Length: 67
Image 1 (cartoon, rainbow, N blue to C red):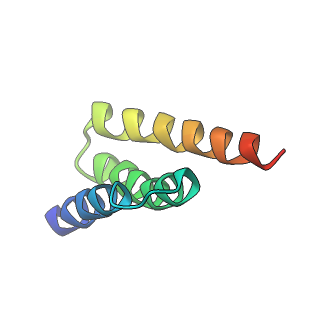
Image 2 (tube, rainbow, N blue to C red):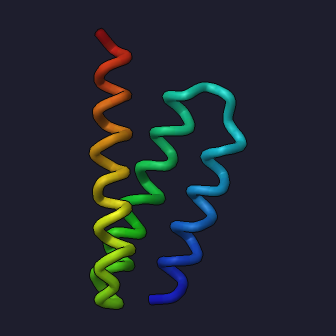
């Protein structure tokens, strides 16, 4: 399970290497989803709750900027 958390951390870190907001948010979504799964697997409420909310926020801003 720890490998899932490590991969999620790497994805979040990589997302900040990009310059375009949509790229940052898109890659960060994948990292956050992995953290949600990781948090559920290790029964860490704060981990999956925070990252679940982040996924919603990222999706909102990605869709907002389409219009």
